[in-house]
Amino acid sequence: MSTSPVIGVLALQGDVREHVRALSSAGAQPAAIRRPEELDAVDGLVIPGGESTTIWKLATAFELMEPVRKRIAAGMPAFGSCAGMIMLADRLLDSALSQQTFGGIDMTVRRNAFGRQVDSFETELDIRGIGGPRLRAVFIRAPWVESTGPAVEILSRDSSTGRIVAVRHGPLLATAFHPELTADDRVHRLFADIVKGRS
Image (cartoon, rainbow, N blue to C red; front, side, top):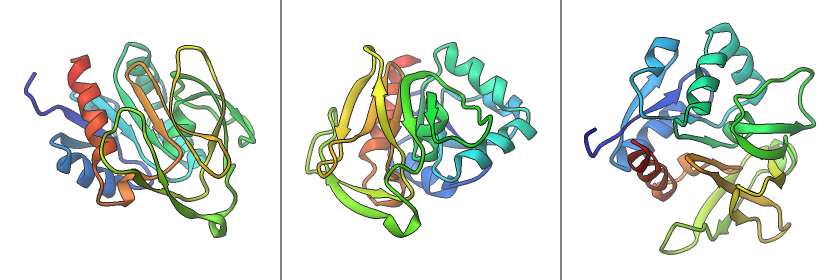
């Protein structure tokens, strides 16, 4: 493949434009994904922040749930921010009735763990695998990771609570915060490198 991977952004709901911008800044070729056949053309997939139950319902309506699950199970790299972290979790706490996820990361995630919209905050984080200064992280109705399996690498914890807020499981990456809402593209560069290494 070329040195510039094609990375899809699940364009059903959430911070789609922001991820497209960040991926372009990180040197990837972004592509909006709304149909199953569009998924075949990408090397990796971003699942944006938004509302996880809405993403699940729309993915079901657009017949994307099973195709995305199958690509992830087959080794496609995926990155989820906030609601995307929820959608990549194998297990949920405080989930909507019968809510389903794409799964892939051996972790248990608690939805809206940091509180409501009014409890949104920004903080500085150290992220394993990302050099340079601490990363400014935006948390909006954010989840956190309650527990992980042995193969999951913990990349960052919130300093005030000690909760897990960034993980990697093979080619899968997830953050409880929204790196797409800042001008810092280092998380997206990390994901682009994961995609390049997998292809």
